[in-house]
Length: 245
Image (cartoon, rainbow, N blue to C red; front, side, top):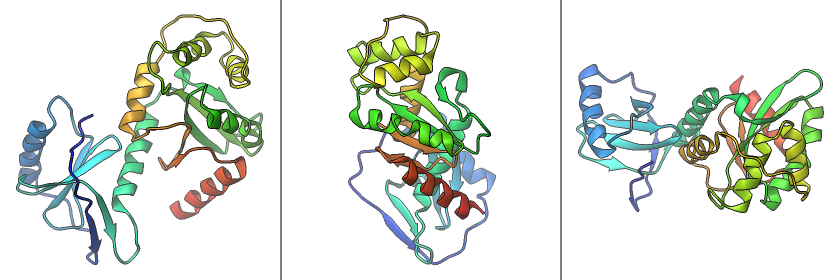
């Protein structure tokens, strides 16, 4: 994913209400301009921001802003003064949520509650990451509180590394969860080879702005970076649910 090397950090403090959608001609012109700036990639959305003449261009959970005439590009946080909301962070969460919806659970290692599933978290994991192992110890407590935990692959050491081969072995095992438990506990498993979604997982993670593990994604698309105990995760889930109401 192409990222602009802009050193400018933009914080715009807004006191104006949201503006209606852009006209079709402006959007067409911006689409043409954006296709030149970021070739071979289709934006997830181009939409007007509350700042007149400023448009948000989003690729998955990555985004930048462009002027209506296509002459200026800005990379940074867009913040609303009255509420202190980061419109940029909210847009990224929307992008992550949309991408989560398109991910196939059959390509994940899933730990589901014995009873009813109340919440779902998706975790980008590296099996040799110490904090990923600590988080794995919290899975039973999360399951007890109705949280389904879904693991996707994000081997930080890259393709072909020992960690990568371990993760392929997990995904190729007949019992993925059992193999994951053994590896997270520092034990060995048989090395197996099969088709895995590892490249898709890594690309998706990069598009979501993930650069470390563990990375916990809530159903809302909100990102919790790093290790958190089960109690903290539950508190964050409840907070997001209350805000959404």
